Amino acid sequence: MSDKKDLWIAAITRGHNAGVALLKNGELVFATEEERYTRRKYDGGPFAAMIKILEFTDRLDYLVVAHTQTLHDTAGMIDFTGDDVYTGLARKLGLIDRYRPSYNKPGMEHPQVIDLSHMHHKLHAACAFYRSGFNEAAAVIVDGAGTFIPMQVKNENTWGWEVESIFNCSYPAIFDTVFKNIGMRSVVPTQIETVDVKGETYDSIISDRAGIVKVYEAATEYCGFTAIEAGKTMGLFPYGEPNDNIPPLFDDLGIVSLSNRNVIIPTYPNSGIVNAGLYPELKDGLASDVTKLQNRRDMAYACQTQTQAEVVKYIRKAVEKTGHKNVVISGGYGLNCVANYHYLEALKDEGINIYVEPISNDAGTALGAALMTHRHLTEDTTNYGVDHNLYLGIKYCYSDEEMLETVNKYNGSIEDATHDDIVELITNKNIVSLFQGGSEAGPRALGNRSILYDPTDPDGKDFVNQVKRREYFRPFAGTILEEDVHEWFDLRGMDSSPSMMYAVNCQPGVEDKIPAIIHVDGTCRIQTVNRDQNPHYYDIIKTFKNKTDCPIIFNTSFNLGGEPLVETLDDACRTLSESEIEYLYLPEYGKLVSIKNA
Image (cartoon, rainbow, N blue to C red):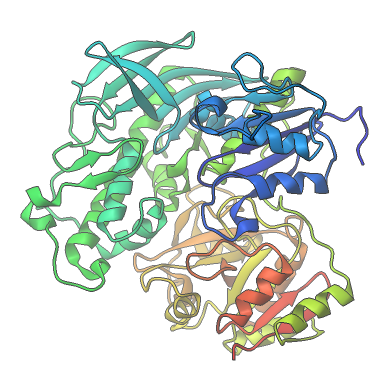
């Protein structure tokens, strides 16, 4: 299946948002998350995703492993042979050499397996840097709890966790740590010192306080969600307002990003707790849905506005410590579209160029691990420019018989259709799902696994939220023809927004034209698209514009509440059968599927 001269590197990330990235001669040919195949949100252990590597190659030169703890610490072993489970699976699939002895002891690892789990934040940085187009850059990583760092407190051995990091990045594979905030579970006085870990020396803050993401996670649980659902808190924040009865979430100690421990109690390595019992304003109220309590909304507002202000401090600190005006941002907080837009305004007069990585969740560390390993091995210093391609899933090819069999399984029908037919359905207030090409890497639906609707419908937000079984307050995104974006939205100096990483302001008069996708604060999370990026999607929106004079389509992820993006045609048809969504468009085949929920 593959030529021996080709260099194949796969990387996996093991924890939540587990996933795989595959390089052929340095080119990213496949990236996915485990949840797409197992249908369990945030699933760990990328076993199903690893099997999909066989769709591209029957052998690997290297398998690179990313996590926050090493394989020998946490991965578990296969019976009898003693392999860790990931090396063992790769061996059993024939991806790496099967004819090796067992490697169940440190120092006897499989020579084709590289464990980079000790550099979680660096892998976030590598993903962002290599895809940014910058030749040199500072990386700001704002994350929950990265690599476990062995520390000694009061003469006792314990652990710290990297929560914010700054790196100095350059080709081919140089990622020098210059600053790190280390959170401790142990009660320790705040220390500012130089740390030497595994031969690397850097300035650090060591404390028992919550990092930026831990503050956000604590607020998220306070608002009634699980810690990993921080995007919901971002959606709730505009319903809140400044509240002087909520104490500051960060102490002004002259050091960036140290939380107020009276308000936020970290529970490393997990989330944190809002110490509501200490403050009358924060105590529980009576409501079946706590998001309708003003103290929850105001906490979401405080959390969003104060955390994004702290990240601005980190960006400035990164420029100061590295001398670079180019800054890449990753880690979980990089997915905060509201904050990303805020940086553009806060830093507009400082000459700082920002790239925010679209795959900022932990799945991105697989990309970082693969790209870093390739550059380290080959010493390739070529800058290939900004990489906007996120359509990195498997490109399925279905025969007429396979399509018909799948549709019949769900008692549906299938017929020929054109873009005009789809636009006619949408303008008549029908939801139409869109399935084509490879699924999107990262959490955003960008036109290959999307649900489309009419953005001009005043009731569109409530209608689609009900159909998708999402919370009432959650906003929707829009995709706009790239050539029309500046007439409709203020991108604060950006030319485009192809990865939907910014919640932007509308131009005057726009809000009333597309009420279904405008949030309560007058912003819209926007994706720009040109024909080179996604021809069918572009042409659908162009057809919609020709019919309505509106160059924007309502776009949300093709899934129901709590589920991952659909991956296969079967996933898509099942979703229709279990919801009020009736239509599924397959533009590559010119087919429209109709499945009515009985």
